Image (cartoon, rainbow, N blue to C red; front, side, top):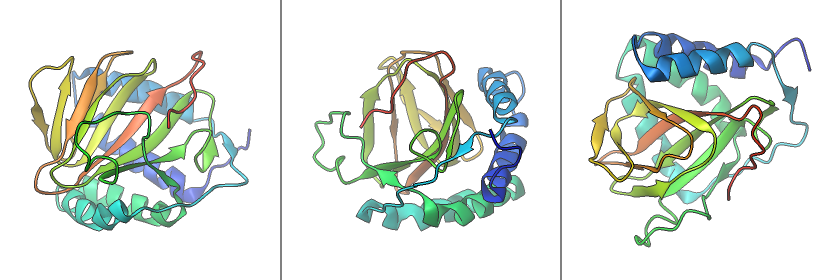
Length: 206
């Protein structure tokens, strides 16, 4: 593995850690710190990234504007992400089924660190989800433990429970295989997520 990391990815990780470390006594905090400890060792550069963009990405700037306005730390996170954004390969989540026909074109995900991202890593996947206004990202689950850092506000639920609004800078923690969903409001939902993939034979769903 290389001893140094892409400076734009490094800046995003530093900004992410600053924000998530501010939450105390949270299951998300210990999860994210474990991820950052693993990510202290850079992964291998992906030599053949596949930048891709969909029409839903037109909502990205509105989400980033809401993120940057939340706090100085979130503004730093936004600046770091903007430097990476043109290089990301956005994908639609084809394996998640929704009764809302708008979902298919109303969401996208991009991997930053992971097999199909800008850097490969054996322990952690880091990516971002974008959900257009008024869209529900339906219930789904996966073996890896997960944490979200909310960039622009939205609502989350677990185990088909009540929707809970999360503001920019707040976090969400999903234990392995728990059903979870997220929902945007009048503005786009943006969230950075980390998956703990160490010792899990996990391939990214499509």
